[in-house]
Amino acid sequence: MSTPNKTPPGADPKQLERTGTVREIGSQAVWSLSSCKPGFGVDQLRDDNLETYWQSDGSQPHLVNIQFRRKTTVKTLCIYADYKSDESYTPSKISVRVGNNFHNLQEIRQLELVEPSGWIHVPLTDAHKKPIRTFMIQIAVLANHQNGRDTHMRQIKVYTPVEESSIGKFPRCTTIDFMMYRSIR
Image 1 (cartoon, one colour):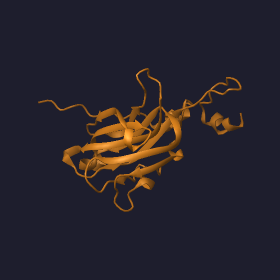
Image 2 (cartoon, rainbow, N blue to C red):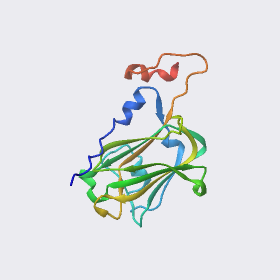
Image 3 (cartoon, helix red, strand yellow):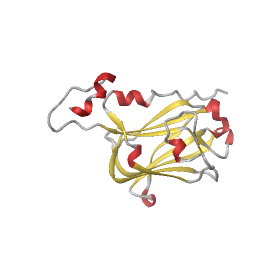
């Protein structure tokens, strides 16, 4: 009997930002969790430290809710998972849902993860491959490896496409030196 291939890691999301085509907008949202152990909540999920994590503390599905104050264009969701460190706490089945509020969420992606180790990139696009516009994103952990009960997620990043300037088209700043001064333009 063959075992499924491991989920390959994606690129570091910071590399996506350096291209100048996307920016991280998680700080513009209100984050909530279905449950968490004390000291293992939203702050750890968003602290840019791959050694810290959110740990759920309840029955499945475990939920991460990301709510924006206005309808927001979202292109990619990046989730960091590490099977070697988290074993039975590692998600194996995730559902990504979007909508205006808790009452009209619709699933747009379902992922089967096999021993993930690194960043998982989830494109949030419609049928025409355009980024979605939404008020809310919900990530539901439906199952864990080895039938684990609680889950660990180490980081979640939310990306929007960068709009072209209405003043004129400027070349993209892709080097670190140029990016330091891009807000001056």
